[in-house]
Image (cartoon, rainbow, N blue to C red; front, side, top):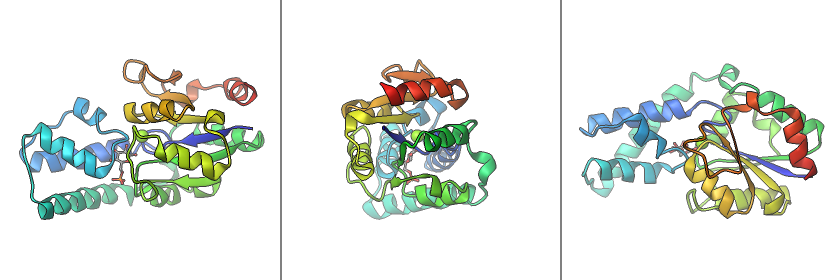
Length: 216
Ligand code: BG6
Ligand code: MG
């Protein structure tokens, strides 16, 4: 038996695009340029760390009060996108993989940096599929720290080396590697070359591959 840990944003649902839109709006309103390349560096990164990075790129500082206000503004904008989500936004073949894992009697956890994770899982009707949910409310250290995945392994009652992580972010793959788990990058090989395996998306992952992970 294995523990399968899924990141949320960019792995189960394409919320990465909503994070991008919300951060871009905030950055531009502050007079800071924000490109897709910069956005790549924010994937998997906590809300606080993301704003710190954007301000550093723009050579700007904010008072504590303004920093908190900007974070609240970003989240409000982000949640306005989330409110319109439904099951159609689950990424291709995610249900096939989740169903296969259930059929094979494997245990499944979420391992996300997001504080909005439970809301999103409810919106897309996937919450019941998970044996454990570990998100941004449960951790004190952000990815690439392995804390989120180690807590997930513990909740699943699995040793880290018996866990497999699906991740779309550079920081998340690094966290899985540090945790001594099998890391599976979902995205481009150019970005996620440090993962044990990389697939463009779940449509490229065969049932046989999943079964081989369970057996080895
Ligand atoms: C990660 C996203 O999953 O969660 C990041 O990849 C995001 O882009 C982080 O900043 C925190 O999410 P939230 O929803 O708590 O702002
Ligand atoms: Mg992600």
